[in-house]
Length: 618
Image 1 (cartoon, rainbow, N blue to C red):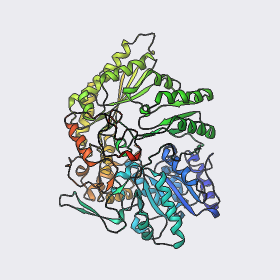
Image 2: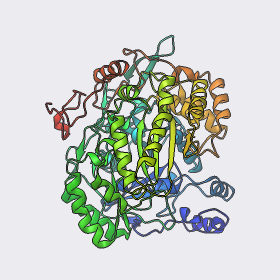
Image 3: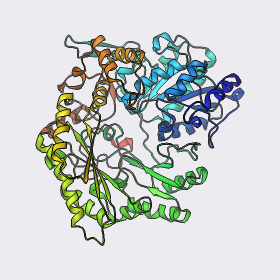
Image 4: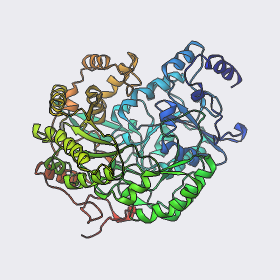
């Protein structure tokens, strides 16, 4: 450790943001190595600024470190300047708490939050001095583990991981590490350990499954090749959200990060069922914490960390069944302690004056909403379940409250989209602008800015749109140009998402194991940090796909039949395939589905999983 520490100190002042690489922050956990039996390197495959904002890391970091003889440490992807210093000076990838090389740990765990972070995993393993292919890591340790939302289809990364954890990690992580601690004195082989781990619900060992393909390149069958491997692996889920572990303190960084504040998770899951939204389906069912639990965790975190802002985290915070009572209760504390209360993930159809008043305590410069589509027909196709009347009502309320900036998020390339739907985006923005000028001068702000942002639709597994083709690059460029031509006012600012990253995202999201080779070869060519525009090398990716015989259109732009075996068909995220098919058919008829609060729509989630509305009759 001392040698590595000296090498790090030597190069710190030659790098940007050196605080990312030194550890020692308030709240970080340092243990006596002589009393530690299991060491876990929690790797976030992106930069420190992004990873330190991630709630999942904070939860699992505290959870594992609660066990006296386990030690969980943090690891992040270095930026290219510090990475070069590491290679030039023989500094292996290390954990921030101990500065020890992670290649010596028992577990190396990666959270896969975004497809474009995949190559960062390979880069980090290589920086650690480890073979990136699982078959080349012969010993028991380190065991390379993957978790997070992208694990709902981990096949494009199957060659690099020893095992994956499906679903929510609080319970299964404890079970996995307990199994290892029990077996470690027996000095098992890696296969012996993985066979026992495969018996744990939610654990998927990709090497224990064989994949067969049809002549047309589609998957024919995915078959277990050892007795311990289940034909279908079911995700883990926390039924009682009030009893689940939540940390009483966060690591407080020395430097500013993306979300520099306390975070309290108020609910998991979503009642809405937007047909494009993967999170809305893989995090089902909808479960929420009680007001007392949220208040207790808010007070504890603010007092322990010293943060002056707390964010209520969820997919749709305003869907909490007691949102008004919750805000009133929390305000008693936050107003007294002068702590800002942030409310992200608000919906247009339940935005109220109470919510606006609460937001004004945080900021008054702008509000962000996501209509997603410009016409009512297309909003019905995607099951957004908001009307233009609700959009205008909310914007009117905002303008009368003094807000001067409104951001509107849309998607281009949605299934069944026409030019009329694209023009509808511009028309809706114009109506919002007109609404501002119709607001009495004494109520509205001095100026107005409407920001319209569009992303390219990416079909994702475990959604009703998993069968749909992505628009081709040529189609997306045409749609973007057409939308630009439809916007006339200088008060409306349009930004369009860089569509080449969306192509790669679609290939990796719906890819099978054949894509592993392309991931590996693209990494060898220098592709990593792909989610950062300045590092993204699409030409190298395109060249790699051609060399590997990978047709991107096969994965991204192809309509898939309902009975096709998907690369993720052996994974069970509780929402039934029949429900996804039913929703897809309704989408093509522009028919909406009620939300869970209005009545159960039979998505397949059983009431025993703890959902607030599961099984509820209309």
